[in-house]
Image (spheres, rainbow, N blue to C red):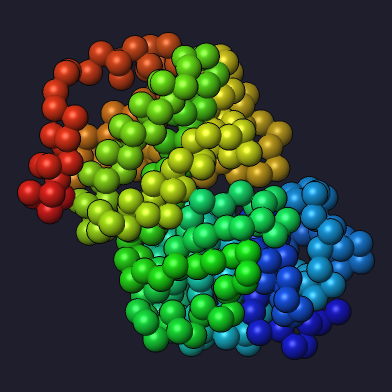
Length: 342
């Protein structure tokens, strides 16, 4: 099936891409969904299932899958939902054009330090970019459970007015922002912090410790975000603090589950082996730590996650180091960041 009436396309048929396609199709909208694997395309079109990535969902009849990216080129709006480290490669295959590209991956490109909007802007200078981010578990979105997200538009209110009727559904509520950098940084940093919270869970350190990691991790997110030009109010919203709390609280989070395995004594290689889905925080952590060091931003939790992922230190050593940091005023780093604009 070609989906000739499609007005919107979704590039990437992992759990999140498929869930977004399902949400958009919930009102009968024709959605064209790109998947890399031919067998997955057949399963979606013939059986209305995505068993490798979202087995819980019976997919709407108005979702039409294809393995041919060129078939999405004429659509005016594309949601780009491929993993962050593969974004550049996929966009290189997509014909450029004056369309809205809504970026839904959360991460920082490992080799270059580029945020996703920078990657997309370099790949297609004609596209109008937006970022969709927030506290979202794919299986809940696919099931039609209430979800709120940030839609950060580089084209400000004009782009927002164009996109909101295409994306908003009764159970999927976007909130407007023009802070694209803030939306991206919130999504990228929270993945790394979720690994740290998983470590706390794996080591049975208790809920107090996890709450402390969330709070101190948010302070790190805020310092780094302000240094990169994000706004504090963006990071205190859905795409920052909201996403952080969700991702740091459940094994439904791939990053939290990775940290859980690390806290239980597995190496990163062991924890990541055989996984069909991607824990974005594992690739983001080292480049985030480098960017933070370059900007003079202290991110000790992020640095600890890097040590765990590289095998440099075991979980017990990393946690001890974080707990042994100098005692100081809780808001010292935040106040300095605001005063310096960094």
